[in-house]
Image (cartoon, rainbow, N blue to C red; front, side):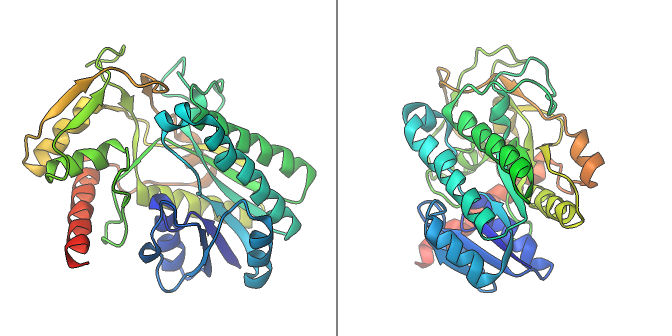
Length: 330
């Protein structure tokens, strides 16, 4: 019962690979290594270097390794970049996902776990936002992911395939055992950038927008620890293997922190009062988005273990230090 993990050399995908291996699963990683890292794939997993949109390659991989489930993480994820390069995002996140789905159906794959996003909601009318709220993404990134949700739903109606689409809120932190973390040097994740700044790897960090209709004027987000998110994928896979129906579920903790609050916690945990530049808003950023996350608990029995912002930030700092040691040793 091998599982194919697309984007398994990247941030969230590598944590899914670890979670699968930890419980004895047979894992195959498909990654083009454009943003992922070969060293992030454990030796116990098989690595296929290539593009998820290459239907022939995906078909061969499914056949050669007996793939029965796909966990699909591979994607472009930078919201401002999607605004400036919409066609690149629709190609990578939508068109190539369509090819992956077709290859999965042709190869007899029955189960797909899809890495979706809270960006499908756009500017939600209410917070916390539930799965049944209107979908009105304000960026090509969010639209590209919503299109893939639609493709999965339509495919599941027409073929013997079931899926769980997990709408992530803001993913942060690192593997508590220190085996993986957010490793892309130019990543735009707030906690990643704050950790790099605290460690002197950036001269300052920017806050984009302080005039939003939030308590302190900065954007409000729901931060979910990456190992908790990987566990959500595991219980989603178990649900499908038990014969469960297709589902679309939020993944978050149901509580929001502002950008300025996160920065203050990073300063406290790191002990460094690093410089912060206040800048205008970026296009595509909603003011506030927090998960209504009761459905995933009810449907899948998911119970997060790392719902602690200080702990998440400490993990991010520890991982940045490990990356620095890796670079020094190279």
